Amino acid sequence: MVNGESVKFDIRGMLPEELRELLHEAGEKPYRAAQVFGWIQDKAVQSFSEMKNAGDKVSDFLAKRTQLQPLKLVRERISSDGTRKYLWALQDKSLIETVLMRHGGDKTRNRNTLCLSTQVGCGMGCSFCATGTLGFIRNLEAGEIVAQVLDVTRQRAAEEEGFKVHNLVYMGMGEPLLNLSAVLKSIKILNNSAGQNIGIRRITVSTCGLAPQIEQLAEEELDIVLAVSLHAPTNDLRDRMMPVNRRYPLERLLAACRRYIEKTGRRVTFEYALIKGLNDSPAQAKELAALLAGLKANVNLIPINTHANNTFKRPHPAGVQGFLRLLQNQGLHAVIREEKGGDIEAACGQLAGKER
Ligand code: SAH
Ligand code: SF4
Image (spheres, rainbow, N blue to C red):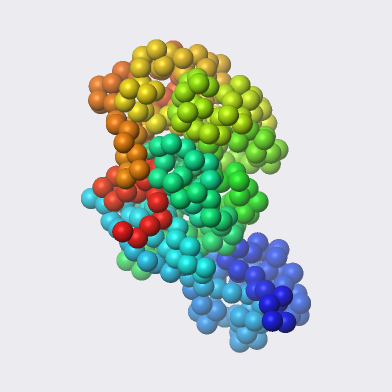
């Protein structure tokens, strides 16, 4: 309660059943809630007055009890490869970033992937990541996660008829598993067939390796893709690159991944950012292959991206290929990840949520 007025729900973070319950208070039938959910989540309206058939009574009630405020676009940058990076201001003026990547030139098969932020900043302190330099500021609400999809879709659809986001990767700013309830709620909303209807298997959640939360996620038995940021094949090296490893060393992390695979039957994706002279030697490729032997795993190799606070270098392309072949020769499913948006600091680990 603020000044005797109740705190308003963020309507973009409400599930259909929550809308039903709220509108029931106003004496409205369930079909009304379904209609409102469609306006908010499918049509991505940015004000109550856009909900044409909802009626004044419902609009007025919702305006009193909920809020619907689009994210404020502070800056948009467009890469030479078509990637777009959005810098948004939230209501408390916190800044977050969202990245839209386009795959495939053919219009009918155009695959749009949106990279979502889940926290303002991040407290995990990985040595190679720009977001980590901000420290943890706060968790995003479910509605603020959903809003990134709705506002990008709305903006693109104004220029590209029928624009749709096909894939979601929770790989923007922040550690999603430290904001698990809001992340799970946003997934339920965005997967709902009356809303954005994004396929559950087209949703990836990436973690730096919080073992207990991976086990908790396994219990949800969701058909999403779990990605784990590994980046080193030994505890000694990983301790230095990622402080989280001192809490959950590789044995503990991989046990959680095994549990996840057992429970969901899905492959786990391991991200490995290649850094020249640090984790890119042939011996380390063999150690990595041995570490993941027998696990249902995909490995994504990402040549490290640089930013103002990191001086790491990428291996020579031939070195990257060599590392890849060594993994494949040991029977691992491994690929080199296509990099997008490096020229606008939109690539992995470059999101600092800052206006330059
Ligand atoms: N916090 C989560 C998700 C956001 S980071 C996580 O760490 O998994 C998204 C991905 O970018 C992670 O795999 C992360 O390890 C990777 N990354 C961070 N900094 C990077 C950099 N400079 N170059 C390449 N990848 C980087
Ligand atoms: Fe946080 Fe992920 Fe960056 Fe590590 S890599 S600091 S966990 S956002």
